[in-house]
Image (cartoon, rainbow, N blue to C red):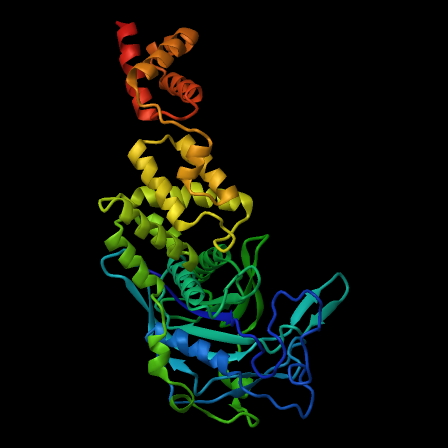
Length: 479
């Protein structure tokens, strides 16, 4: 049996103010080409690099979060190769003495035994310029040249495309919580390169995958390609391949280089870094806030939410913080509250409106305490989902408390059964065909009748109560 073995190399552009070895702005939003450049990042002879301390700190934060060993002494080195987007003809990187080694990241956290993916190293280097290909020429934009680039390399512990995607997603989430990188694949801020082999044989690298779908599909294709080749008695060559998104195949780019091909040697213009001397690692570790894995487990234990809902809540730190503030407020209204109901309104209704209006949590007018108040009223008064949606939409526009809006709109909840019975009898009289359809066993007819009643009551009655009365009335008619 041919078992896949996969290791990942992941590059992440760091969110520092300046570039890695010069004072040029690190501004991924800059649309004008070759604006944030200087002699250092353009590779002019005689220009001298200096180390960006904030970039080093970002790597150390990730290392601490991933239980890695922090090196006492770290060294930058020159990695020599020629490519048009590399102005110096070499890249300042790390090889022999990276900032971090070992460590692990857990994936599939809801299994009884989460799987640990071991790390080999995390190091720091500079990004290359950006190549812009046109019909008969290629242009170079050096704004990206010299941007701090973190590279993380795993051990070959991954055994499927799904595990690879789970690892990449968890790492992306962690970097966003640490605020060291936005890790946006579409913008090239996160690039993933899997190394794939079968039964620990010759490995093939897939270069610069820029979406989770490409990662999964590329690995799946490569596993099948290698299996077919081995079954035919062919040898697998150590090579670098690219992913053709249109054809959904991997294509040969070049034969794989070895470390000696890059002629690594210590960067003569940069001194070795004494990490304990330059950074207070205990202080840095104490500054790390709650990370996704811990938050995931705490939400499960305290709020007892559905696992899929927790994933939605924690996919953004601002989202998780908002929910917690709303949950705290809801508990003050009702200590025995159902947090799942709050989560449902938050994940479905509120986020749906935010997506529709293009809002984020910074621009959201609905305060967490107002959402909690609405959920409390919905639970207490048995509000219809339609009324909740209408109130949420108004709260989104005005930023008002739901109770204020209820008073302004003169909404009164109809709970009197006789009043509802009168409405329902009239609807039954006006919709005889729907009544006949219901008698024939068409359940949709009942939903139609309930909808008519909700319209008549302006969604100010409980749909459960309306359904109960309808069933009684329709049962007496059918007999």
